[in-house]
Structure formats: C-alpha cells, structure tokens
Image 1: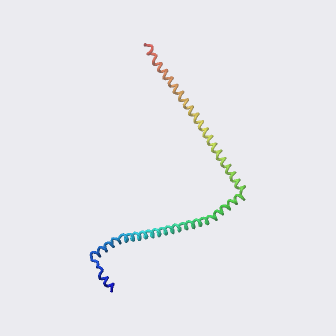
Image 2: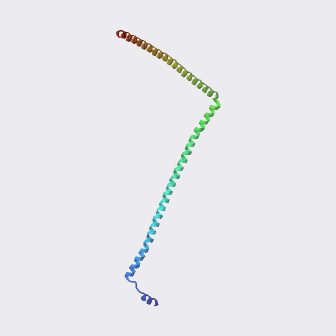
Image 3: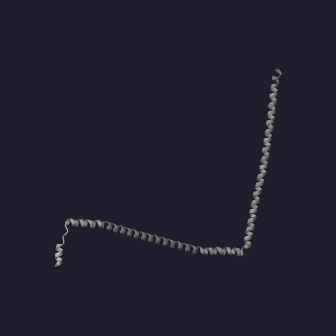
Length: 169
C-alpha cells in the first residue's frame, strides 16, 4: 500500500509541462532524425556507387575477354598463312636460287637498256638544242648585219641631204 500512497503523493504533471517536455524531446529528436536520414542517403549512395563500379568492372572484363578471344582467333587464323608463306619462301630459296639469280640478272639488264635509251634521248635533245642555238645565232647575226646596213644607208642619206646646206653656209 505504500506504493499507492506514494503515487498519490507525487505531483501530477500539468498540461503545459507535458507540452514543454514534448517540445524539448521533439527538438532533441530532430538532429537525430536528420543524422539518420543523412546516413541512409549516404548508405544508398555508397550502395549505388558500388553497384555502378561492379557493372563497369563486369563490362570491362567482358570487353577484355572479347578482345583476347578475337586476338587469339586472328592469331590462329594467321598462323597457317604465315606457315605457308614461310614454306614458300623456303622452297624458293632452297630450290630456285639459280632461277632467282637469272631473274634479277635479266631485270638488271633491262634497267641498263632503259638507262641507255634515256641517255640516247638526252644526247639527241642536246644535238637539237645545239642546232637551235646555231640557227638562233645565225638569225641574230643576220639581223645585226641587216640593221648595220640599214643604218649605214641612213647615215649616207643624211650626209647627202646635208651637203647642199653646208655649201650655202
């Protein structure tokens, strides 16, 4: 019974006191709730980043695997071609050395013939140029001679025309 009497003796909170306590509790809970929301948003962002990173890593790994597979296929496809080319080259060197030597000898002779023909064309061009030079020199010399003759004739005409004037003076 002592409990009942103690409960009765305790003062009962008034409405205004209860509202103040609630306000105080609400004010104290706001930063806690805000921190809780920020932690949830941060956790969501970390989760989203981790998922994106995992997707990018998976995608890069898949592309790398595709590239390696493609390279191996290309190498495998090129190997027979390389072997065949090597074998053909080896056969040419082993079997056809005299044939190759004859081929290059004939090719060298052909280049010498082309060179000789080119020098012949140059020589003929030089001969034509010499003939043209001689023709030009003769034409210029003839023009100079003709001009000198005309000038001498003009001088004689001028002298003849001036004689009657000299006799008057």
